[in-house]
Image (tube, rainbow, N blue to C red; front, side, top):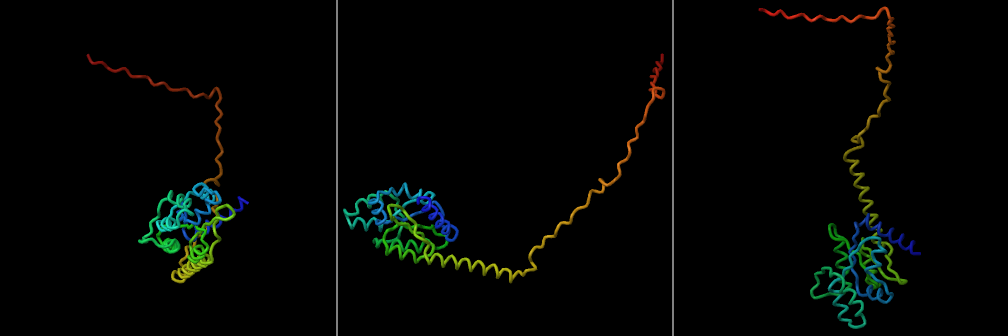
Length: 230
């Protein structure tokens, strides 16, 4: 079951990586409902999240989340304690808004080109459903005492199809403008014949037989004595 769960997570993450550029290290926004369920099921989020996603990740929250938990008080003190240990991700809300408004604002912002991609961890069903309507957003939740990724949303699948169709249309347009004749035609290499030098007949070697009587005598040169003038 564990292997099946990890394979499923890898498949979903691969989809978001190739279609929406959601890459490690993952930045994950965590709300109070997720932290509360983790506490109830005795899940160490810091430890289990990287194992489940198979990559490093940064757990963050927002001041809107902290403010909401502080208003609720003692019933969520444990969740508040967990989230105060995370870095606070910037949101422009002053005064603080509801977690739903805050997360939806950051989700829409993150899908814009050039912006940092975010993942969201929440067990709020209403918030999850609204996040699913935004293409390119990966959601995490806790169920059966474990962390799980939501299935790829219909909005994300439609966006992927649109991207694929646009790419195909651009390729067809490029062919129409440039024309099929502009394709580089590579000439086939002809089979090379044998090296002409290798076809030459070998010259027969002339072996000179030397007998004892026909030995060549070496001529010694006599040195001339220099005339010394008196």
